[in-house]
Length: 330
Image (cartoon, rainbow, N blue to C red; front, side, top):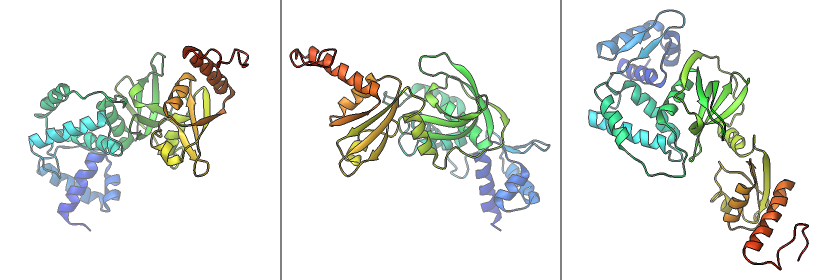
């Protein structure tokens, strides 16, 4: 049995991680009885923490806004500095720490004292970040999704695919994945009855919570790999396969996991696979790599490359060396 003070800190931490806990769930997580949980809740209330309780089978305990910031015990200026820093990292994620910043920001905003909320809103509006290659995402969307994942609640939002009007989606959210350039949500699409990967920057409305859901088995053990396969291969029109005459490590240094799937073919060759809706984009990106490569497929990409080479030769004034429309030399 852990000491009372340590148990109270553990209880506070649990109340910050999830929006609502039932008494039995807290007791099981902490290894104590439900009676001990009730006593500890009362102790926290006596210390000034607003913990709300809702009756019934679906009821539970919830840490309200306006509490202090345990266990860090930050003063007002420190709390604002941490919140702004987390907000900046969440909006323009740094590879490797973006997901943790969203979880921390969700905790912090939940218990941020009311007197600090207007200051935080003003400072956040006044800070401007220089643009980068990372897709811009509203931190409020990420924190709302993170909270729904913790609470196991369905969410609904408007989702806009490329060049299409937004449509309403109802999903069961399971994971947020940060690729360093974009955020992706892995969720079960209720209407389509299938797993989907959503780009967070294409969610054009603040997610709204719905009823709780029973968790189902994830589509893969390695969710990061699942997302990488989803965003680089499917459901694009063309499945481009290219053999690059360079070692895997050299190619991986300039081709991120959000762009393509890379596999080594011996010590000096790399196979690149990626999905595209048009063929001009992969042609331009492959040419920009400044590496020798061979197009394996599809046939449409080979034909496009031949047509593009003729066009470029003509544009450069190499009329005699350009191939005609039938592929013969002039």
